[in-house]
Length: 231
Image (tube, rainbow, N blue to C red; front, side, top):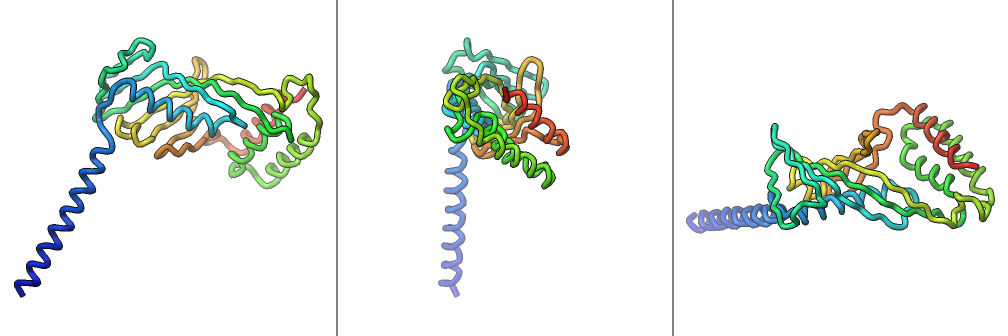
């Protein structure tokens, strides 16, 4: 009987010790304080991860973090990253953290299709769940019809020429710890236009360009966008 009790006590101790190891190791994986330089790196990484998915036929992406805001209740701290001291420590236990992330991306389509059809194919993959079958068929037929056309060498949209685009995101993270884990809400961000663009969860991006938009509007947007690219 005593032997059984002793065995049970040892088992309880081993389990408790294991839980302690797990909790201690997970607790050291993230921190509620970091240097400004490391916080900027987190937002740069998040911006790059999202832009590479959000861009058609991306070749390279560069990211610049311009502003960081830390919000705790009614208190808002704002830093311009061009003048911030890299060794300054940012602490974040609650509230949220945000930053403006500006993207420069270079894209180039494959030689088998033109830029516009590549854009349309990427668009269709993202938004096919919003479309009716007839709409999807119409887009696919448009891609097939235009993919067979030869791209003139002097065409500014010719596939053998790369294009460079610039735009901005604003990334929000519930806390500094979440930012380290790769959890962000992403908004398209300019002086004139601000709209939800997607999210990053554990460094895995999800593009939600057409959040809440009805299929007919999405369908209309594709052909308006593509028509602007066709000579």
